[in-house]
Image 1 (cartoon, rainbow, N blue to C red):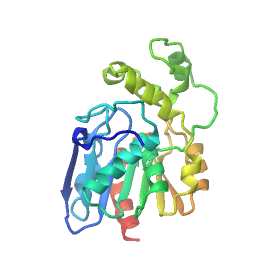
Image 2 (image 1 turned 90 degrees about the vertical axis):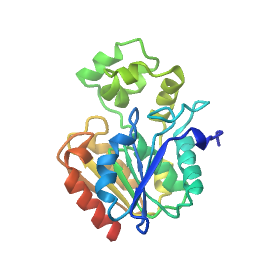
Image 3 (image 1 turned 45 degrees about the vertical axis):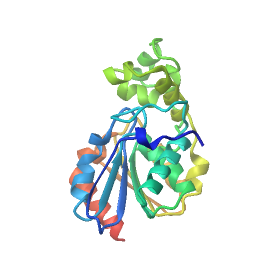
Image 4 (image 1 turned 180 degrees about the horizontal axis):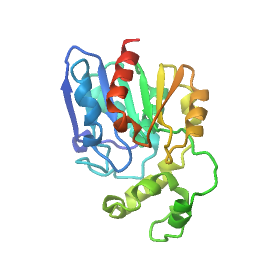
Amino acid sequence: MKKINLDKVNYIQYGNDKGKDIILLHGWGQNIEMMEPLGNPLSSKYHITILDFPGYGKSAEPDEVWTVSDYADLVHELVKKLKIKKPTLIGHSFGGRVAIVYASKYEVDRVVLFGAPCVRTKKGLTLKEKMLKKAKTLPGMGKIAEIAKNYIGSEDYKNASPRMREILVKTVNEDLSEYAKKITAPTLLIWGEMDEAAPFEEAKLLEGLLTDGALIVLPGTHYAYLENLQQVINIINNFMEG
């Protein structure tokens, strides 16, 4: 396990102190704010923890090039520090991939994943991907289509440090299939039917690997959880009570 300094990790906690613990994990290049639309309405019933992954928001960059497993270990160290028992993990995109690894290694109550594939399927490049592949300013561009499609135009991504770019390439290309097979907790996949970053076939692949998994498809894109927020809140509440 890589060296972890929790003093450099930014997180917030709020909500019902008597409720079950939910940890919200944001996607690549994002931060706590992207998960607050979920955390705020859930906080009346549950105790909410949201963190900035190292390298984003107000959390310092890792000192080394991390894997998805390293990020999962970071979350576990925070869980131990906060004395949380059997949390439910809710993760979007990269945060969902971290949740997959965490749930395969550590005890959880439930898992909810939004647009979080365990492995990228081989498919032909879209026109947008072909255009992006021509850009030579970012190392490994041809290998990171999922993130490039969403973040190549953003200042945050273009200004990412060399280390965070290395982490990006490493984590996007990791096959998490063997981790997914080890998850025994009930796992709910919520996917946007028009998700281009994590296409529907990747959701079906992941569902087939899970011991106790279910897939719900909603209208929308890679951010279907925000585009259908109230419906997603209702789904999560029902899942938590089941």
